[in-house]
Amino acid sequence: MQKWVELPVPDPREDPVGFRDAIRLNSLGSLFFFTHVTLRKDRLALLHQQMCSWLETEDLHLVMEVPMGHFKTTIGSIGYPIWSALPFSPYDEEQMRALGYGDAWCRFMAKMHNANTRTLITHEIEDRATDMGKEVDDAYENNDLFRTVFEEIIPDSSCVWNDHSKYQKRDRRFPFDATNPTFSYRGVGQALQGVRADRTIQDDNFGRAAQQNMLDGDGKIGDSVWRWHGQLSTRLDRTRDGKVLGQQLVIGNRWGHDDLNSRIKKNQPHFSFETHDAEGGCCPLHPHNTPIFPEEWPLPALKQKHADLGNYDYFHFYRNKSILPTECIFDETWLRYFRFKQSAPDLELDDPRNVLLIEHESADGKVFDDLSPGSLSIKMLVDIAHAKKIKRCDHVILVLGYDPVSYHLYVLDLWAEATGYSELVANVYKIAHRWRMRDFFLETVAAQNILKFYLDERNQREGNPLMVNELPYDNSENAKKNRIEALEPVLRNNQIWAHRSQAKLVDQVRSYPAGLVDVLDTFGYMLKITDVGISNSELMKFLSSQYSDFENRSVGSGGY
Image (cartoon, rainbow, N blue to C red):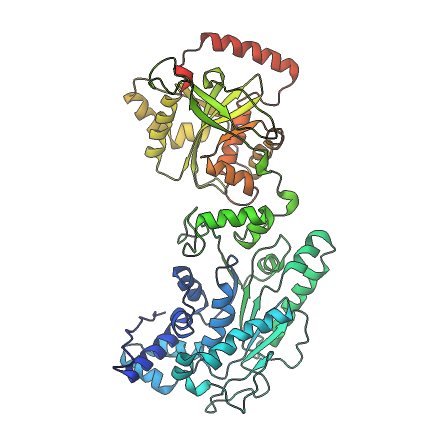
């Protein structure tokens, strides 16, 4: 379908007719222009152009999962129903044809705009439904630009206009339903007898009450919302063969595995879904760790909101990730943190007496002595993201140090990026040399197939080539879940120490099982190649062998 090309808008003082025509044609041709300019919703941005494009279609059966505070109601429940009720006059068509828009476009405009249309807008709470109608009131009663450009639909004293039913002026050249308003507003469960509509818009029908009942009760509220969702479709006109003529828009965040949106996805394949994450990573237009609405929700603001809400609410309100409270098996407060420091900062960095130390941040009143990384058993693992890996987008390089005395695990180095294989391998060697590593661990599938060429070529050029220790490859859902969740007792016992710069590790501990698991999955492999959780008898054997290894180890100052 041809897209509207926005017309330049002349100065109204110099060309009032040209100004009116440009505003009107741009409003008809673009939902975004109409909402942003004509309705004066001036906080809209690039995200909202994308949102508007989802609604500019004749066959609309859409579930729109967009984060809280990202103006999905402004677009879907306020701008879109008014845009649908705009008149498309013969003069509008004549002007568009003069601009080069053909039959298909004009038919599309006639489908999109109908002054006699009927829209039913619903919400979990009746008062919130009528509150949305007050935004419509403001446009029709107080917006001089809208009233001037579309004066023929502005209601007069003959038009009923109240909280639940709003009738704009109809176009009497065409048949219209005198008994149903342009905009109807209902709360979930209210009577629908006699209501007919060309479209239904369900805005947060599955709300807090249904969510709490789903988690803590018998789920009957959710059942009622689902049943009412089905009843709404009976308000739409049908053809003789039973085909639904109306449009259906469902707006709301994900709440759980049995919420309204989940049931629609399972039972109504004719619905499409637009599911978006405030932190990005949800679609090609929104890369991972790149906010989709940075103008008002940059990452620091999202991090603060996460801290305010906690995992469950944040991931549903802002990331549209469906998790249950019982699935949030990790607690971010279980992590402990360290800093690197020089033992003698008054000496030069290359002075052998200036040893690098690990300085522990105190927590729960516990104080730990500084520790030299040279006393740790250090291992390095490389885990690549490839097509068969689920919920993965980053390659990961992880260097872990194990202290057999305290049983602490130190994340000494962490690199996690989505790069080409050449850059990945370059970082493997860079980090390995930093920690005086002579080998690292890598899944068999990567060592023998994906990275073999890159590693062989690099080893031929290196004075100190690296040896690859192969790990069995198992990326089944259960295997990965088990690897990750095996971290729970180690985390709970405060054995894992991270550097505060390792934001991706902290974020994934906080968000699991929602979101990406790149670093956690790699960490799960690391536990397989360390000796955490072994029995006491095995531990004594391990300690003896490690102490022997330490005596014969050749490392740089502090192991760094």
